Length: 326
Image (cartoon, rainbow, N blue to C red):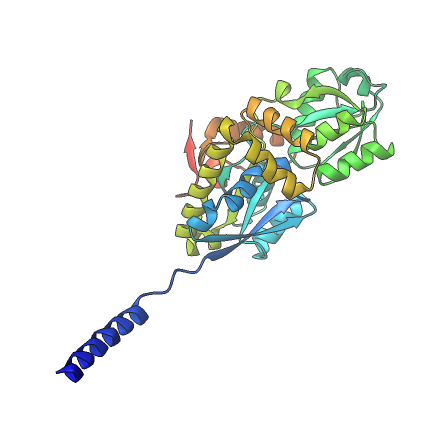
């Protein structure tokens, strides 16, 4: 009798053990090689939030952040398959790529307005005083150039009235300004605030002159989008959560903590960066892309002679991921 009871218990335990072994293992996270420009910075804030708060992990995604020195280099690596996505790069880069036949596209705007301030030597009082001076921008064919043309034209200055030199990332442009190699440059938070604290003069907010020109986007190759559509949908949903979390003022202290840790930065400029980006409503909340605002960038690039082909917003966004709206 006792032996029979023990046999039955062992049989039940064995069945339970077999059932446990039959349960599927937890799904592994999908690694996504994600390119960003330069070094950790405030305009990539939602990516750091999504990692820190576990939004990407909850969507089954592990972001591997890879920093590339120039925006054009990011898109070149994307087109070559060395990156899965570009997390944040100027809107003009994917337009250039498509104009040249590269199979890439925008999956989401990141910066829906320009975050730049124009910082200059303390002796320069206004944008008009930049006549005959040397200005450092990110590239002769990038969003910096589009913005610079808009700012300078509004102040009566045009090509030939000033010299341009190129450094591909914000930290490098600030270094050029500090060294005296240039007279002015465009800087994004928090580096613009580092420059102000160092005594350089803020002579203009680019948003004042170009509120209709979006700044940056996330891009993907067509082949990666076809093969990983579900992963990208999950990634975009996690990114939406990150932006919503950033925009909740109750999270200000924690958001600042995240970027201070990522940048290894002093806290006060990061706090001011948070307030600045919230004030200008910088981060796009979702994957809606304004057709008219994207067309504004295309028109500005054509006016500069920057693109030659017939480019439309429909050719630039990735169908099924970004959503063109009016």
